[in-house]
View 1 (cartoon, one colour):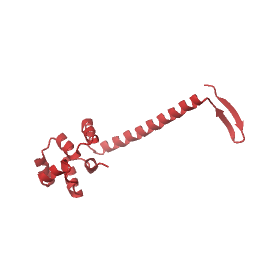
View 2 (view 1 turned 180 degrees about the horizontal axis):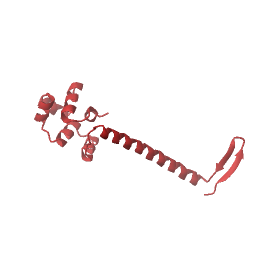
View 3 (view 1 turned 90 degrees about the vertical axis):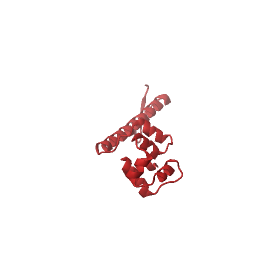
Length: 127
């Protein structure tokens, strides 16, 4: 690396070739990304340690791909709609409507389903 140093009124500056500058900027961006990833991992570890459920990757991917989260979680938990309806005290037809997008679901119903499936509410309602 060929760096030149020059003194100015405001102190010493370094002058380097553009390719070197761009390489340094890219490294800094990678370091920022690595730090952000480390923060996310640390946060996830804390949540798991405090009892947050571990969701298998294939389940998370199905939800991320747009499948209905109630259906995906229910199938992962190996629970029928009828069993879920009894646990959540909600009609089976209502659960079917939620899973098929015919209804949005009330906050109370979604909370009851999340509790019955033993998952945080935000997994079922998304963003």
